[in-house]
Image (cartoon, rainbow, N blue to C red; front, side):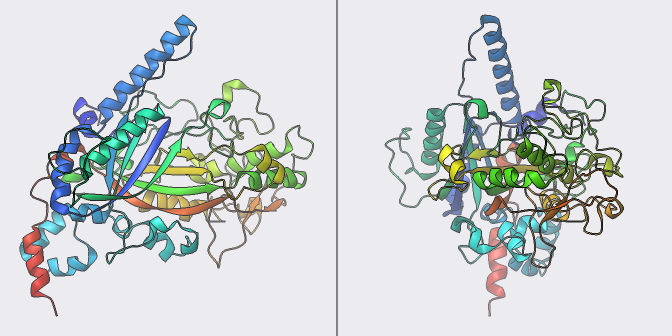
Length: 526
């Protein structure tokens, strides 16, 4: 289905085409008063940035760049603020739009509620569980390594009901928007619109429990994550939505329904109210930059084709990522990163798939999107992350260790129509699987391609972290042990509803009859 003005006006802007930003704050909250929250959410909806708004922002930025080019001046920076909102399953429950697992057994005893449940309940077991129960329960995440904010805090096992993300290109504008958001949900009813002097309600609708703030790195580091790699390259293009059409060896366009609910490619059969919504995964990733650089410098001497390279450490890092730091694909240029035409190239497919003489089978970008190794993309996400923390210091690099008072990383965000087939599948079945891509043991030996060196996680019964590297032999004999430089600090699973769902199902009478549900609870009390 082609993108229409109605879809643009109904879709939250960060899902597609993405909110422009230099600064971003994720304001996590718990609902404290269901009725008050629903009432204030209703009047908050006009503040939400739609896809239509985001497209208009992109045109403003495009014109500013053209004007700067003509006048030979720097680009005039516009604030272009954005606001989106997303909910965990408990957040939707507070709005009468989700029935938790404990109540589901009761609902089945009531014919009317049971029918509505089958028709209206949002589908997705991982979304219902949340990230902590999912990844800690499966053994991927270690509770002690997660920030306390993401730990279960209540009887329902969830610490977070939702997140409001605020973006801007100017920090002072971001701070003003954050104050406006807080006033909207926290101020005493009838307070004048002054985000600096309002009186907090004695019974606030929500509690903003914590926030995570990110910013695009400054100067020459702009557009790069903290390890120094250009980020945001090779986003999936949505068929019929994005103007750009894949060329040459680029991956074919993605069905919109793999990212946005209710379209071709979405096999979840969600209720009608979920259309134009998307599932958001937020992942708090801490990066150990000095340790990463030291590993590359020390181990490059042991890697094939790197010892005599002018930048041996960078070449080893390129092997592990699948791109050089400036974005050049290793598959197109395995030994050199100087061709500017390749800096953002996406014109490669890793063929022939029976060898990895250029890009290692287990390189990060090959694990995340195997291209020619698969007949079609069946696990695709739309990434929207932003770095956090200051750039690494010379003192840290000299000490080869991250300072105790310094922290940096990536606030990873992605959208998909199915968390299990998106984020969860990519990270647990591909990135952390030593034997993916499949059927490669004849070319890399019995230990398989290896783990994704960047985001792969290891369960206790898994092999040690290693990767097979191209060495000109078949099967590959070169294998390198890997350290970990990215620590998982927690996160959660959310649903980003459409504007129509916010205006109707989520702020109206409620999808599920709360009085009938309460009667069922009382009737079934011991």
